[in-house]
Image (tube, rainbow, N blue to C red; front, side, top):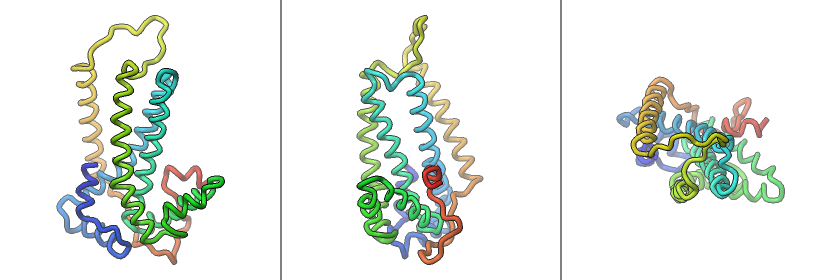
Length: 234
């Protein structure tokens, strides 16, 4: 979110300008390339983290009553996280993004009954263009973050309401109970600092991918969807 705000200050959601803004960000803005790298890799890591979190909750019985509503809410937030990545994928307006979104949007058309309507709504027409870029930008910076923040607030409250983080069932009892402060908080700060350090180092060494400018007349071979949709594409 923080890096996204800085990126937004140097971006124009228009096909003729978006790619040039990315090039300018990388070449002319102090630490602009690093900010973009952090934003890209942390967004991908967020999808992985959300999936791992849902797996942990499932295997510790967090989907059972009285936590079933929070489980459904968690699955919905995972879809929003994937949606945030999906909408951000197009914004660089390079060949990689253009054709990944073209393929991914075509997958939406396979949803029974509503697929064609959903695809045309997402793209604001039959193909990727100015309408799609405007839609994706609005969803990426306003709609999806607002929904995520609101749902996260309720999600965290619901966790506390249900008695804290779900734990594995244990016939012999839960053992000694300790307070969140300072025990859990101290561990979370240490892990958080480690993850941020690793993410920063990785972003310094591995640039976020950027292909040539989008060209609707020349498709790459093969044209691939975003990595989290590759299974569906296959």
